[in-house]
Length: 333
Image (tube, rainbow, N blue to C red; front, side, top):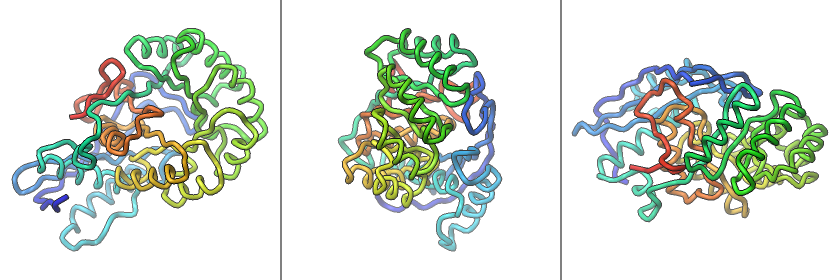
């Protein structure tokens, strides 16, 4: 790619609001601030990126990200290097890629990989405050064309989790893939007991049943349910250690949490060289970040397991034009 000359860099906070609260072990998300970065070249082309800090998933705050982006924008001419904030780095990387693609008159994924697909099947996240609401959300996702559904677990006790997963599986039928995300809620012993009960529902995999690579490796060794590493591997070094330690059958990559699409692509290469799968997912950010992650997934061929990127529909207030699936697919411009 030819280097682009940046004439202007704009930084602004944007408030995201969700249609209904999303409960995770790290807290319930109802709204959150993110930071948009807009880069403009000398010809008026614009590239967008987003810094989306999220407690429990990233080490930085929205204040850290905004300060880092403003500092980077002011110091670009000095070539001071990337900021310490991981989500600020993600915003810069995404904005630069978006700008370069627009200058080249193409899409990000085709700029990176000319033969990459223009559409991606994506997994939907079933949400709701009750078992009935979550099951109804899953049914609606399947009716909208999604062949994979994810359910959050770990916040209502194992009996509550089993009730939810059982109801979802019975309502969506046996042919839809079902994945779970525990966000590191359990200890090793309880994770093994819980996974033994949940395995009856034909799970594609469970993300982060326990926190920490050593504990994940222990669970993976003893459980027949496929294990995905998520929050325990948010740096290249942790991804490499997750592979070396046998912590998971696959690794979840969130470009917004690891430093951007370029860093996620490097992490994916490490995982695949070890013979494991990667799945690209969102950080529940705005459509700006989701779009960047989708183009990355296409460019590196991370299409199976399908990316977890059908999350713009969870937003009541987005920071950009909503990037929504069409019959279960994201269409990449």
